[in-house]
Length: 501
Image 1 (spheres, rainbow, N blue to C red):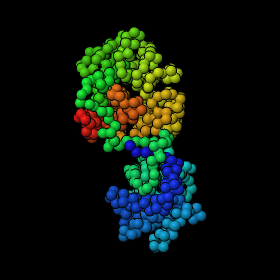
Image 2: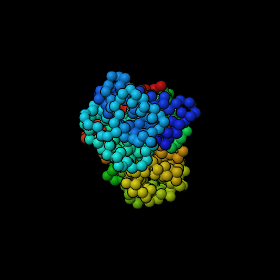
Image 3: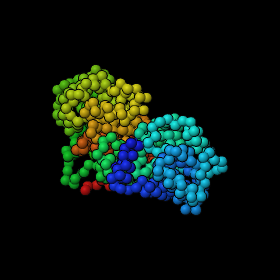
Image 4: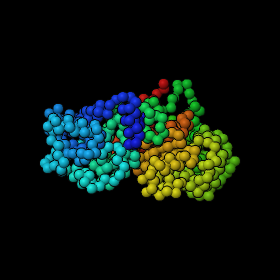
């Protein structure tokens, strides 16, 4: 697990490190410069003729120090000072003077000539205003040059908190991030401008982030072994949960099959599908491992019996929007006392009866895509895109649920817990049925005893890793939802946790 702070959170950690731990700002600056040079070398970037574009703040100070290190390595750096002399921070002033004393050329106008790399050190993580005037012109000029492009900590012009482009932004292929990658470099469109992001340790204390739920976090593949629920040698199917999947209206057997198979693949012990009678035969053939129970119309006593049987409920995948579906959803939300995952048509029906969330007496996970989130909250999709962290936090403060807001960067939030931003996955997953698979994976994990927040986080991540595995096998265009299930299984197997401990 690693953190993805915004600029304000990172600045607070920086301040604590300097003032409380006593590590001078100049020491952090030297380490930042050293790590940036190391990463460029590791990435094969030719720094023989580098142009470092520096601002007046500490980000600019990093840039001046980078130029000095390149000079010491036998390179021929040039510095383009884009800031204002009167605005120099104390540390940046020292670094600028040192670079000048060493004879490094410092210019203040757009330079002529060709460069092997342009290194952006104009603005740091604190930028919140629109980039305009001279700075916008300089960034445009930098983007037009035909050479490698590297950003120090964050590309100038990208909001560290939201990924919004503040007028214009430097288009980097590599961003070397100090201590932590900033969340704005991973949210779109900021990710497009940040390129490959590499966090480097420079001595900043980030332990305090664990106490601040406002700080975003993410997982890496190496985290999977520690996250998966344990499977003991002396166990049976009852130890891994009885799942009730209320899925698949008439003609939607595929959604029921995908979600149920995904739950089994994630480790659930027993899956029962409660579906429209028309789906019985096809589901018995597609997934003989599942128990098939069917309805023709709403049957309250039958549904109550199934809810009493289940250890976990998943409702909504291909459920449809009929009166019967609506009755089933309302009854489930009134009666359920075990964890409940609500997806797809379940969410669309819920948007008509959102007050049911105030009265639900069980842990619940909602998995809306952006349009479904719009129906649940009343915000437009464009508003959610711009204010996604703010809106998902507002929603989970209002309702006692885990919300999994699906997008190219899926975000998970529960009141009192960290934001989770998923960085795995790819565009090959943008296919019908992918959401059904996600709902099933989360269900299968929670069925094994994981709490709803942790099960949602791991489910989102495994689903995305499954997509990455599927793309490796089938490319960007030909992945089907069923391939994600195989990919999830492979991702779990890679962790070494499929065998008994």
